[in-house]
Amino acid sequence: MKDTITVGLLGLGTVGSGVIEILEDHKESIQHKTGCDVTIKTVLVSNLTKPRDIDNTSTKLTDRYEDITQDPDIDVVVEVMGGIDHTLTILREAIENGKHIVTANKDLVAQHGAELFEASSRNQCDLFYEASVAGGIPIIRSILDGLSSDKIRKMMGIVNGTTNYILTKMTKEGVDFDSVLKEAQELGFAEADPTADVDGLDAARKMTILSILGFSMPFNLEDVEVKGIRGISLADIQYARQLGYSVKLIGVAEHDETGVAVNVEPTLLPVEHPLSSVNDEYNAVYVYGDAVGETMFYGPGAGKLPTATAVVSDLIAVVKSLRLGTSGSAYVQPQFPKQVKEKKDQLTKKYMRLHVHDQPGMLMELTKIFAEYGISFDQIIQREADKDDERELMMVTHQVSEEDFKRAYNDLESLSSIRSVDSVFRVEGSN
Image (cartoon, rainbow, N blue to C red):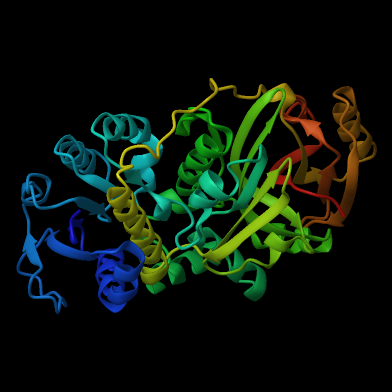
């Protein structure tokens, strides 16, 4: 049995430096838990001339990934550099050379996880990825281990810190979307190109991973219905509050006898719902199980040390597997074939905000169209608009199928009284 486990680290950015910091600061504790030393031998960086704050003189910097993937002394490769195609090439080679993998790369796991898991199992290697979803929250390990005896019916949560920060600022300070986004970029909460965050793609990748694990079905990113927060206005947030709701970007994965539906979209939540109080860059995930009922996991969704904590926890799991001789046995193939719900079976409530011409019979025309599809309303608010001949309507439906709502929405275009449909959001819960 080896007394030292040697690590190759791919990436020395925020999370990479956090991994080194935790391994150094918690060295004695990790040795006690694993029974051996864990040492970083080589770190892959893109620029060797850049000054680095690494006190450990035994750690080598390289710009050649082969120095890690082909080094027989390296047992585990920790990947925190991001990217997809080039990173996939590196990890393929590392696995074929018998290296165990720890990654924080949600994009890679969501798109190429099946391939990497198959290669890991074939080579009797471990592949862990706790940090790929919700930063420092141990949601993946909780689903795989803590809730493994239960049947999960629904997972719902805030899994993107950038959008939650933006919506929190808009709600609490009344600042418009563009201004908050700019501030988030200056503070480092949002990337220079915020597309993946604000358009919901980041959250969709995380919900893909959770759906595969929670429902044991081989889902893909293409199976997720995605809508981001670019279209949310201060008016929507203010009107939602008057109706008794907050606005959050929510990922929802639901499973029943008709199949599974996975969605990421702006959602109205009752203000008393626990997720309504999750603010700034924090994440939270609800898991509903047949036996356990409701459980909620809350914590920082990103950041240097929270994410690095999840990475090092996975590294410790790899080391324990090595010492127990169980490497490569953690991954279990999805048990069931994929079953995606049809639109007619996806039931939810909807919020709409629209501008209409102020004319006799306008509201009757509108409700008649929805009535044709069996859609009724839980709440309706009518207000004066900026123009004298217009009114602004805010409406919350009772539960409706996505198929029927889409048909009714399309029929609205034929009404001369409709000037514009400004917003359509999902509604969870009721007031």
